[in-house]
Amino acid sequence: MPSPREAKEHLQNAMEEAVASVNRALDRLMPQTELAEARLFEAMRYGVLNGGKRLRPFLVMESANLFNVDPVYARRVAAAVEMVHSYSLIHDDLPSMDNAALRRGKPTTHKAFDDATAVLAGDALLTLAFEVLGDQETHGDPRVRIDLVCTLAKAAGPHGMLGGQMLDLIGEKQEFDVGTISRLQRMKTGMLIAFACEAGAILGKSGEPQRKALRNYAYDLGLAFQVTDDILDVEADPQDTGKDSGADAKAGKSTFVSTLGKDNARMRANMLVEQAKSHLSIFGERADMLRDVADYVLQRRA
Image 1 (spheres, rainbow, N blue to C red):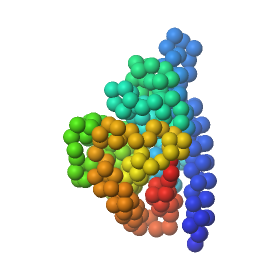
Image 2: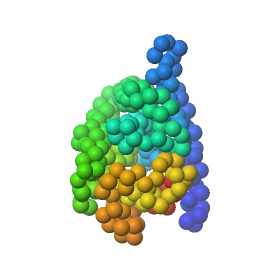
Image 3: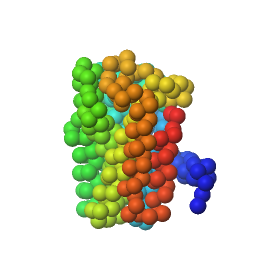
Image 4: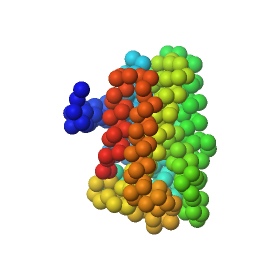
């Protein structure tokens, strides 16, 4: 059995390999042109190929490994998930939303280009993601492709990420209790992470017990990720996180930290991580990497 240090190093190496692999896939899938609308494509590439941990793509690839899915299929779905995630960040950073100046240590897309181009770049990334999922190269079985498209649409739409973003905006003017904050973050962050984890089971044509286990793991993982994000927003150095600190407090948002306090928020994150790992028992040792991801979320500093 590997030591905690060995497990951490193994995970870090695996994540670095996944980042390189997904970045190559994104580079191939991202359009380039010399036509008059080239600025749009430049902004799309800027919004995606500007760093990042690629956690969601890594979860796609690791969940796919559980079912011996063709890595080519997994990489394409991983790239599509990152496109949707990047679109959400581009729009979140806009002046009409969070009005952020930094993302991943660089100027946000609307700062590097302009507001209108950033809106179009986000829209283009979202639609390109579904084009990728619907393409035969993503899976030979059309039923699998339809399942991927429908599941991602639900995760990213008004019952998922977008609904969570609406609650996030409401939370700037209205104080939320812990239950509402948890629902907000499950929708805004957890639903896309849940799709990333479930995607491997969809690609592998797995049964509902396996899909449910991965969904439940992802929901707890997503909440733990957000709790640690709230903590980092309060105490981390912007040089480490690559974005402005204290943004939630400045916007008057209710967070796990503002509602529970830092110590209780840390306790909740620990509980969620242990709960997330417990859902993976159905997979045995094959899911050890996903268990290590849960520990990584708890320990991250950026």
